[in-house]
Length: 271
Image 1: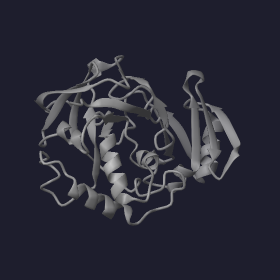
Image 2 (image 1 turned 30 degrees about the vertical axis):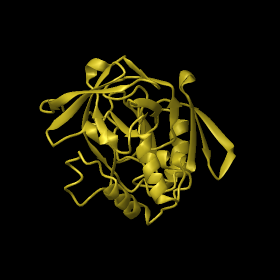
Image 3 (image 1 turned 180 degrees about the vertical axis):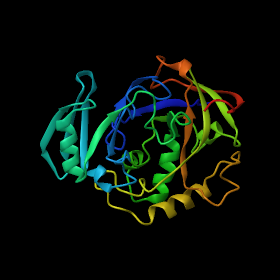
Image 4 (image 1 turned 45 degrees about the vertical axis):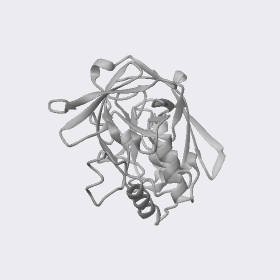
């Protein structure tokens, strides 16, 4: 019998921009090290992200984290690239981003998991490749790799049926304690989706049919054991929000590590 096994690891050093695919990832504070460690904020402290502007999809981003460098280019003109030191307070980098998004902004940094959509409660998001394949087949309008970028999960697992990962959450107030490799984690809740997945991850073009088709696909394929989604009308969820205790900092997970469920636990006092 197959066991749930890590097949893909992904971090997003700058919130809302392009990913880095890894074979091994270190645990930081309530998150993977270097995942969403930077974010773009405007003069009011609000994020510049995919929920706010589709222009994030047009900014191609590559990284050399060992050298603290980031390279930006417009996907419509990739030959014209700009390399900056990746750090908070880099005025040249801030000016480039301000010009690209046509609004004053600056890049800020936190290594505490503060820039996650649900800080602490969701240090990573986890999904099975079978879930993405099932959804891709029903949508029939986007590739698997394209779909992966739309949902931006940190961990993908293989060796399980579609939506098996929904065993990793239970009723409100309780979580599911599990081990990923030798790292202790707690599944908290299904991840509600926003207006980002319906947009093409490379052009920002909106597919107005995406959300409806996704919800119909999810409704048809809900796991029988699920209690949170099967009794509700809204099925616009994909992946699981996972809490990482601070005690796990410095440990590592890698492609090929297996997932083992331990028990249901109370979430009281964790957040």
